[in-house]
Length: 221
Figure 1 (tube, one colour):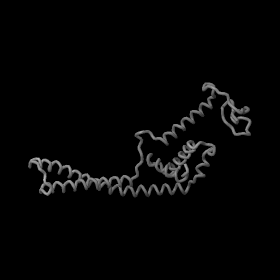
Figure 2 (tube, rainbow, N blue to C red):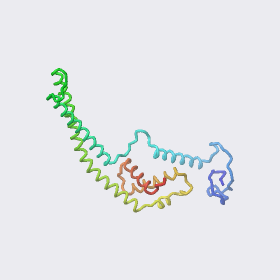
Figure 3 (cartoon, rainbow, N blue to C red):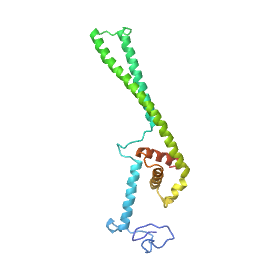
């Protein structure tokens, strides 16, 4: 059943519009946008805004910052450090073998000297980068532990005080909503709970936490 004035849909059994107080009809006649009430236009704008927000959540714009946890950063940095050290050491050993003619190169002496200077400087630079990367990886290792402890603390707090049923209970008419709309409302409720726990979380870190919490409570979604 529909209200012919504000275009609100009602379940069967209701005969009058709660807002307009007029009789409901089984079907609505097609109308142009200029004929829609101001209230209906406002509702349409609200739904459009929600859909746009939902699209931003599900499909971030190019260039958006994606969260990378400290543990992953540490592993990447350590891998880079090993790579640079290996290349630097292997290159210097290779130059030494060439210098002592263990690996003969048929070229003029001055060319060997130039090659040794250029390649030696390059491999020494690789060693320097590898050492610096190792120093940074040690710092990241400590940051990773701190971040993991913080994440576990936040998640434990949310899991203790929230449940899937409690979240859905705060959504009006959740049983009749589309999956995309339901996701949007759940997302906002979880985000609010996180902000109440801590207001200084970075946006990318918060989005990662929301994803973890959402998948914990609503794995089927």
